[in-house]
Structures are given as C-alpha cells and as structure tokens.
Length: 334
Image (cartoon, rainbow, N blue to C red; front, side, top):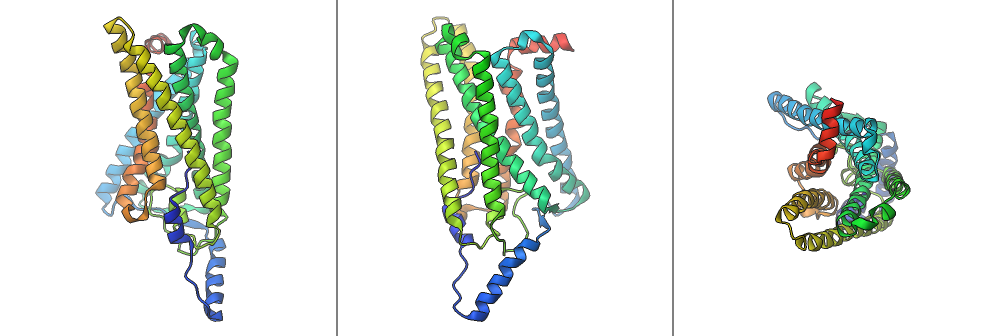
C-alpha cells in the first residue's frame, strides 16, 4: 500500500511562498530549522466532551478485543492442529498475524488518548506508528493478492493446486509479502520524516498518517514524494487488477458448476472476499489520493477507520470462520 498523498496536496503544503527579502529568507530558514526540535506531535481529539471520549474508548475496546480474540484463535488453531498445516492455512495464519499487528498499531494509542483525555504522541512513537501502519497495509495488500491467486487455483485449476501452490511456493509468497511491506515502509517513513516541518506539530488525524505529516512540511523536495506516489500507486493498481482478473475467472468457473448448491457455496465464499478487498483498497487509496479540496477531519477519520480498523475486525469472519474445516478444528481445540 504505502501511498503517500496526492501530488496536489503535496504541492499545496510543500512549496513555501517566495520571499526575496534577505530578512524574510533568514526567518524562513530559521523556521525550517526549528522542525528538527519537534519532540512530539498532537493528534486529533476524537471529541470535546468527556462522555463522547469515553464512548469512543469503550467502542474501540470492544472492536479491539473482538479482533484480538478472533485472530488469536485462528493463529492458535492453525499452529496447534497438524491437519491444518497446509499452504492455504499457512496463508490464513500470515493474514491473521498482519491483521493483529495492524489493529494493535492504531487502536491502543487512540484508546489511551480518549481514556486519559490527552492528544500527544512522542516523535519516536509517531515514527514507529507511521512505519508499522505502512508496513502492515503494504503486506496485507500483497497477501490479499496471494489469497486471490490461491482461490483461483483451487477453483479453476484444482488438479494443479499441489503443484502451483506447494508449501515452498506459499512460504516464498508470504515472505515476499512481508519483505515488500518492510521495504515500502522503510522508504516512505525515511522519506517523510526527512522533510523539514514548519507548520507546527498538530496532526488532523487520530493516527500518525503520512498525508497528515506532509501537511506540516514546507520543503522543496516534493519530487521524491511524487516518485514514491507513482510507484506505490502502480503497485496497488497492479495488485487490484490481478485480484479482479482472478475473481472474474473464478466466477466464470463457478457459473459452469452444474450443482446449484455448489454454485451457492462458491459464491458465498468468494463474494465476501471481494467485498472486503474492495473496501480495503478503495478506502486506502482514497485516503491517500483524495484532493485537498474535499479533505476534512471528520471525512479523514471515517475513511481511516474503514481501511485501518474495520478490515482486521471482520477479516476473521470473512476468510476463516466460514471455513468448516477450521471451525471443526477450533471446536476440537476448545
């Protein structure tokens, strides 16, 4: 994933006004040099009233615990049941680990701020949160592509499933997903935090997101951002096109199934997958590519929740808990 923001947004916030007066240039340089002294950022307050802050805390806690329990049960079940030590469940295990890490990166700090009525986050804490958000989102995008390919081979080429998706192939694809996430996160985080900040330290979001930090920048080095935006956009679009083409082939194969019950089972499995993928990718791309004219704190918050909080909470229900073999293994384990 790892998108950084719309070039228009970047240009709007990255280019300082020209000042030919020597005193003005000195003041501008002094202001930019002061960005290195930022020790903390101020996150967006969820609400002004104490009642709404506590409501946000309890709702977030419920969502977090549900995601924690659901993904944790999947991980424990797959690890403990040797019948599930297959390529498909290895991919599900990796997916649950990513979801668990993703939601643990964002919600605990937001809950703590609502509970204690604070807004601050340290510079190092913000950098770590920014890195982990990009890391998990990028890895999840790659792994969703792998899962779409897994479904395509299982339905369209079932006789070649063991050959095309053996244990070694699945390990390599999962490792590539994690490695691509780390590389993308390292590039984006290093590039974003290297920009001088001269617009204060208040972020318009309850998380540390790259577009919000870029709004504080006044640097001329926006071409690096544009380059990373183009690369990230191409990667995400490539993954999305591959996923869509895979599901088109899947649906064509499903329609040729003579049994109505078989078609219903295949559609009930694949359609929720495609719905969650579409929600995750569309809201994530919209959050980072939307024009500044339609940006607002409330819209940014809703969109970020849709691609950072909702998928890790519902993915276990969509991808795993509908699997009868996994449910039987979970019952036996419990």
